[in-house]
Amino acid sequence: MGGPTVSGELIAMITNCHQDHKIMAWLSPAYPIGSYSFSHGLEEAITRKIVNDKETLHDWLFQILRLGLGRNDAILLSNAFRANRENLLELGWVAEAFAGSKERHEESLQQGLAFSKVTSFLCRSEIPQAPLPIAIGYAAKIENIGLERLLPLYLHSISANLISAAVRFLPLGQTDGQVVLYRLFEECDKLASETIDLGLDQLANSCFLNDLGSMKHETMNTRIFRS
Image (cartoon, rainbow, N blue to C red; front, side, top):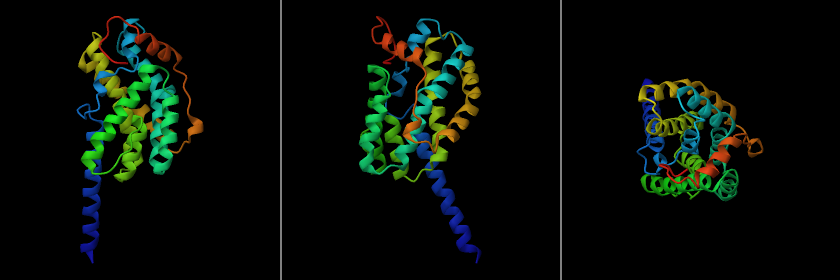
């Protein structure tokens, strides 16, 4: 009587393990989508000394998560997870419309196209070409990865990638970078919980300074990052 139950538990454990490995791979900086080359306007903010230490970096990232990219990406990813394939094109248009500048548009679209190409090959599934949160959300649906597992880690990866950019550009040590990341854990979990069931009518953006900075970044004479 106990055999089938144990077997079922083992299958569930193996399935969850495989899901976790996929999440770790997709969100890793080693996943070949070029995320390391984008700063989401952070380089311009550092150049203008809006961000100049770990406290201002934390505040900048918190606002990006709560009022800009983080919240919107979480909503878009969640809706892509629930969408039928024929609805993805429209979702992609919405995602592109919320890109506040030319380079922010390229950031999301180019990473999304790269993710779709690599993940389609690795998972032997056709992941439609779309902006990054749309592509990841739909890939999670196809691969049976729970949204409640993926979403907070997606927000974590946004924070970690931008902190990595800051560590390379600011006189900010790697330990201080991790301090900032640890302080954002609770916000990533909270934001994921708040956005997991929201519709597209809840999309919004209040990071106007970041949008203006992203536009100015396009014309900087010397820069390291692509956005």
